[in-house]
Image 1 (cartoon, one colour):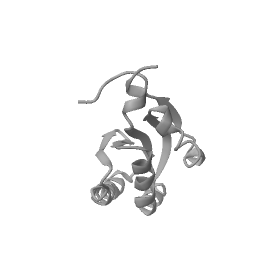
Image 2 (cartoon, rainbow, N blue to C red):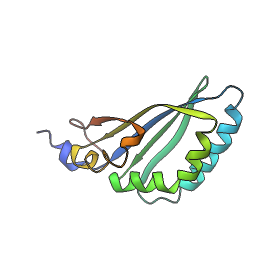
Image 3 (tube, rainbow, N blue to C red):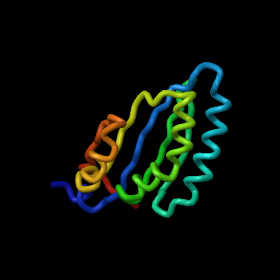
Length: 123
């Protein structure tokens, strides 16, 4: 078994949103609120939005599964607002199996793809 899969508890969530036509600026304003709210989370490692045409991607990672779940609870109201003008078209969760096991049931309704960390390092 690769060493990193048991030592690195970091979890990343990889959502892609398709923004409704004419709603990009409104969605970007919501992104500002996501960022401000997420800045208060002690287990957030990074949090950024990028855009391609009418698709937004949030690049985000947390120290562990607990941090990821806390984030989703923390921004739940904002996420619900964003989903009124954008569709979640893809969702990936990346992490070691021990942390992913803590996320499979709570995130099942979102139908994510779970990617198991097996190789790599962190500086």
